[in-house]
Image (cartoon, rainbow, N blue to C red; front, side, top):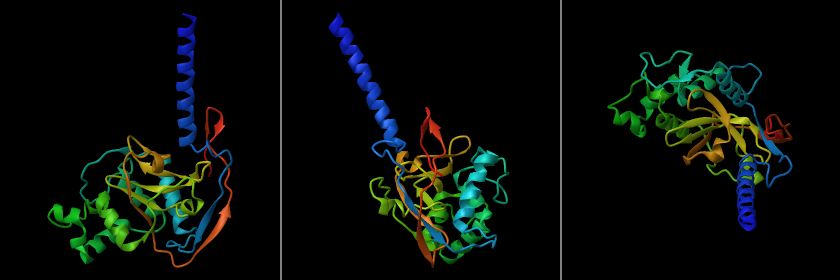
Length: 247
């Protein structure tokens, strides 16, 4: 009887240990005990001339959606734009772009006119529809592929040279989803992602934990001048009293 009890305790402890190890790994705490410094790529583009770079504006615009908490609702809107209280993953993108001074709807509509044959989702629906084209993930993926800087789709927590390519404000495409790279990182250097899924916009470790494969990684607009500047960013969030994220 005593042996059975010991065995049960051993199994329970092992399961707890394994679960804790997985959690610590996912949140970048283990096997990375120290905060990994990732260089910030400084850019010069500032569409709205507010003294804040486009990538910073895009991140701020995305994070603003977390504060505003539009609820997830996917329907067709005459005129294209949903009310501020509603939205889906693509709405977070054009709203973030708007914060940087870009009219993403107009940009997508114009690009479709230039290369309609490349927009397969437009063709599937019988032609352009300005009321919805800019709100379809597949159309945004084509637009970004044609007009933005294409970057790696691999996230490697063990390679700093890889992680430096993932900068705040970058756009990440999946088959049926899209989001924006956050300016917060895990302790291992992997950035979080801001996106609208489920009920409200949120921020999390989606680049690593997503069940969908990353199909595209873009930086808009294409950058002419870029310089790397190392910045060790401070921890900002906690889990069970453990410091987890950087900002």
